[in-house]
Image (cartoon, rainbow, N blue to C red; front, side, top):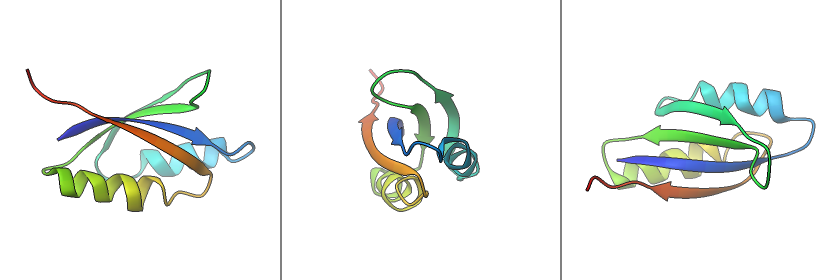
Length: 76
């Protein structure tokens, strides 16, 4: 399973949060963006349940992550 995860970060904690996010197993790419979301990342896992755990426990657990929106992809 693969997903794009949009993250909103706390002001002043961006660099530390991005560094921690990059170190999470299952996070493949991290892009700094401008606009409503501060970061877009790609995350991958074997199952939807594991992907959900990765996002809820790992990514949302990073100090400085205020909120996320997850876009799960599918193969056509």
